[in-house]
Image (spheres, rainbow, N blue to C red):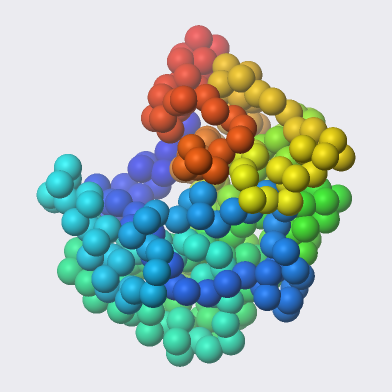
Length: 291
């Protein structure tokens, strides 16, 4: 069918693993002025941060609350602490970073960490120190391989930055994931497929796709409302067909963690499909089964 994230984790762990989101309390270099101002045009961080990560709480408190949430359904689950919000390496204080990662790994049941960050925020010195953790994967927000698109959405980094970070992470012996957004302004499906081609040329282990979501409180929502441009408005079936095309192009040893993301209804303008992630994944699987 295709190589899933569960398949990937099964190659590293002998039990079912669950990611627990952690907010490390950092901002983003695209907001604090070190790279840019205003952030990415599509971004409202509240759309992907679980409620238990909000507020000034310790890493241990967040991980323990996440464990309680999932333990109701899966009492034998083991965990990976996922440093998700904003840019989780946005500091020059590497001792502070390592202390947080070590704190997460010290919680009972936690076997490693996944670090979400930007490709221009991963120094070699940190990669070297990450190897001391029990298990670690780094996930970079790449979004697109097209520099014109990255400029349009105010990412303030290039695809060359992504390629460099992936290669250095791989050379450090650390699994590497990329986050990609389908349907960004100015891109057609051939451009999205070209991004997959660029990913295939790198030592990438995992990709996370998701549909562009138009969110309240973002510059992109304001731009669309003002008529400066529009975005592709996929139906679930149309987007599922695109995902099948992407899978057909993707290197088969790269695991796919997801095809869609879900934002809180009060923030979401488009798309309002009313489907859970697993329901959308089943649409893709049904199409694959009929190829």
